[in-house]
Image (tube, rainbow, N blue to C red; front, side, top):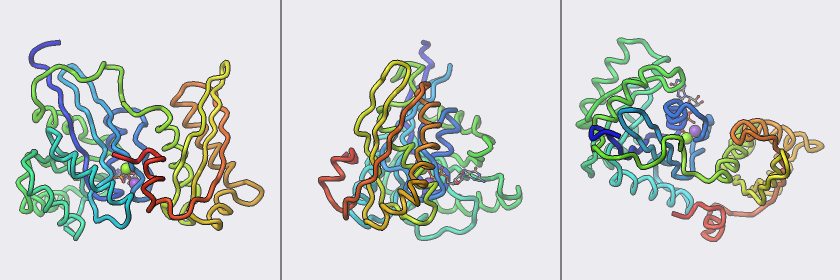
Length: 296
Ligand code: GDP
Ligand code: K
Ligand code: MG
């Protein structure tokens, strides 16, 4: 490795659904951070690693900065705020729009308090015209002293090479933190749990809010198959009924689609058993938050 090699940490922030997970997946080229069209899908601080000849970028996918409504929300906000000072550069993802709402104002206030360089990433440019984009850039430029402003489409992979170049420019010189084949430091179990949660959120559509968690009871290799027992935890008896569905159809649908992704990720046939349990108010319980691995 040469002495021009760069390495450092990048935090990804932005309001829910702006495309943080999609961008990370696109940059890394493999599905690790989960994505969905519901806010707050990302609960944990996921690190993914981008490695090239020029350098290594360790991405921190933060849960997003917003005002907390319960203990889990509190925890998520803390994680996000802490990461901002620890990293070398911040990517702030925004929607392609002229509207700067309360959510954006809150983020601007937080960013004004710290010295870390901020790259403004205007995402979803596949949805707007070029002239509009120039307007949005102008609007945002007046709000904060950005290190760079980079328009991208995370979904289509447009201009993301340029983004990588911009990030590299703000990283210090130094050796890689991880071997080049490492793309995440998340334990496999946690990724499996997140994949199941993603499928559940997707299959249940609007029927159940965010009150579900997934725990992995066991994950064991048995010859050429991996046996996985997982539990979906919800807040209400009525939710349990919906998750299981008529004659277990919903649970089967969730299991089938989760299994496909898990097999792809683990590159191994998988036997997935899903269970459903009710734990009331688990989001406000410190004990359960810890138990589910959401402690800092
Ligand atoms: P997060 O909450 O910030 O992590 O957002 P996600 O990555 O989960 O994305 C939220 C939604 O926006 C998903 O439905 C994505 O497919 C969609 N999305 C993300 N990036 C783009 C983009 O560049 N263009 C378009 N059209 N949609 C996008
Ligand atoms: K989301
Ligand atoms: Mg996300």
